[in-house]
Length: 184
Image 1 (cartoon, rainbow, N blue to C red):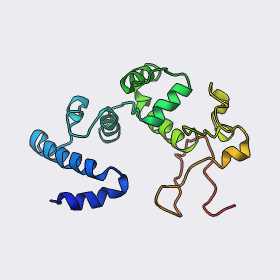
Image 2: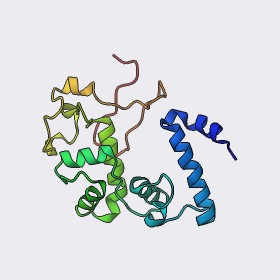
Image 3: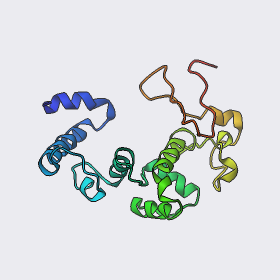
């Protein structure tokens, strides 16, 4: 069993490592004491665990248990409001509004794709509108850089903290991958 300081050092690069270490210790104790060491497969049980909210619960359910869910993080919320799928700010309301628009079988992968797009193309302050593969469908086109060459420079595919590595978009992602690192 890790001592708290050892755990903190292991997770330090993730940020807020002290609070996360406390949550992880509480989470592991709750899993041991309340769920016989097993991760529960119901949202009500998951959100009862220390440090677990609806966002994390939906990620766990969708990816570990195959139970569809919409994961509303800051990227997801920003994009679905830009796309006029909802005008809600509250994550649970955003989740409900988006769930009403798509078949349940699509919710988990929709979440991944929207979040991926928000992290790499449709950024909060400077969206890369001119390099966006779904620009013709976007009601907010023009909020960001529309010049294709300038917009391409805004695309983010590099894996944070891992120089020399690039993320590969999913095979069905409609945009081109970023240029290789070091390429001018």
